[in-house]
Amino acid sequence: ISDLAVDSFKKFKNTSPIISIENPPAGMGFSTGEELKEIIEKSREKFVEKLKSTGMNEKKAREEAEKLIGVTWDVGHINMMRKYGYDSKNIVEETEKVAPLVKHVHLSDNFGFEHTELPMGMGNVPIKEIMEKLGKEGYDAKKIIEAGNWWQHFQRSPLKETLESFGSPIYSSGQAPYWNQSLGFQQNYYSGYGAFLPQKNYEIFGGGFSGLPSEFGGQLRQDNNRLSGNPLE
Image 1 (cartoon, helix red, strand yellow):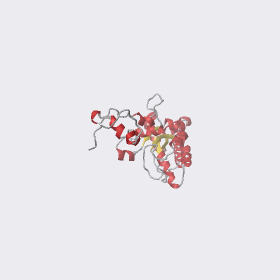
Image 2 (image 1 turned 120 degrees about the horizontal axis):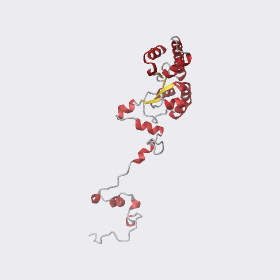
Image 3 (image 1 turned 180 degrees about the vertical axis):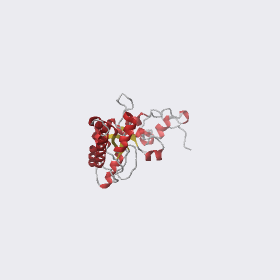
Image 4 (image 1 turned 135 degrees about the vertical axis):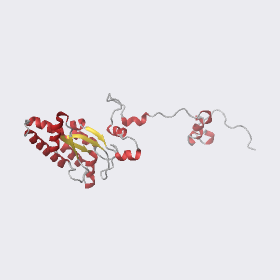
């Protein structure tokens, strides 16, 4: 990692791309926050030493190391620790270990067992607690929605569902209404079917027994007689 970062810095200087190492699904190598933290910190130290050998002062070298080498924290991958007996508290603790190192956040939800990749809010990833632990780094980090399974089966973007799960405001003012209220914005259909199927038909015959006239056992009282007066025979 440090070799790649140094070569990139020598070539691109201030426009060097960030090398952001992602935590793989739980159970694989370097999948915990502790392991990932150790990798990044050692890579930064080696980066600093290599730049110092070129004549750069240590302070500047460390600034470049912190800018160019960091972590991509995949909240769905770390949530898969659940299948090994861990709970939300452990997942948040692992997040806290890498919080100062985070550059990107991958957003995908699951139930802790399979790599399901659902929009946030549809599984049990403790996203609120994770983002609180990430703090400013999490707020500033680029966030990528990784909900491939949702796209595969429903063939539509998971962006709306993700915004709903975060309670994001619809407008840039930051005030209500919010995306998780958007379902109630759809207006009901009021125009009816005209004389072909008048609304009165549903009020009388489609509203249950309590809506029937009193002569038919209901509660609706009428001043006039509904019977035609014609004999049955």
